[in-house]
Image 1 (tube, rainbow, N blue to C red):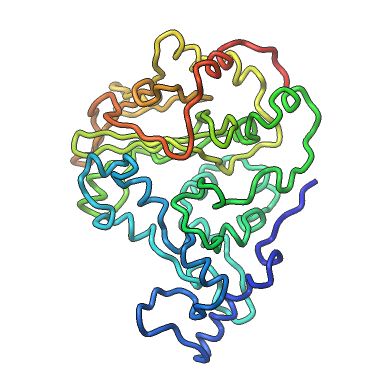
Image 2 (cartoon, rainbow, N blue to C red):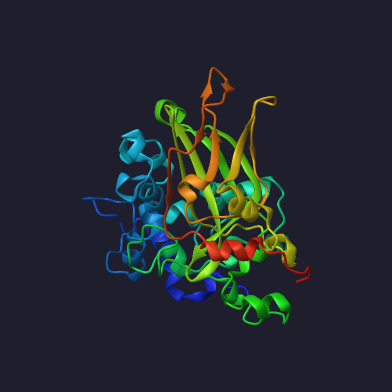
Length: 360
């Protein structure tokens, strides 16, 4: 049974940011003159303290992925994150960046969420299906106060333990009795079967970011779901590919897109998987290929397993952008990274390659 979890109804203290905004406008309270960080003016409030170290407040996720300490793209660029324009968007937020400042209105407009969460906006612009969105649900119908304001722990990613509390099971406490649910139980995450596709910016041309402070990706691509391991489950994954001065890089990690379908994949979509069989036969999978005739990058489609040697086995072609055109650079990547998840084992890939009967 569906029971939406409304941000505004979970915790009375969720009204604090709006009340503070009203008091600020009326001049009854003021932010500190010293070390003003744009946060709530009430340093004693629980929400204020929690929010100060939340991912929304710190914008830490992008920097953590990029930094050399985590094996990120900084290893190849040599440019500190603080010197990039990325930090201009992935920047500390304040209460009124999200909440309405209209007295009596504590709402968070959907456009505010989508203004920062570009992949989710791309899902909408691409008209990709989503059973929750089609039912008229908004971001705050699932995502909770804790996820928005933090829990007082400074996290580096939404995939760190404790950073999220919303799961499919939050609302769907009971699932239909069928062969797939009985076979996989809790070993396979719901989204591995119910997520239609991931979306990513393919082949980001980082030179444009460095010199002009703007993104320049080949395209926002979709049509695949990578499968890896996360939290003791087979879990959907995604990737981000980047090139800079003849250097190429791909980051992989857990990902749940907002492209959820009521009907799950057919067994044959996973078992008897051609990409898994290609890996077993050839030791590699071509994820993105340069089409010389069309002068374009062509991503693979369907379910793609992330193998133990993903750094070298998942092949991406790269193309830099110069003089208004894209051209082939190299087959890569030169380096690959995975945070918060793990690749599938060979035994898991063999299970995917083995054909099974149809049905759900």
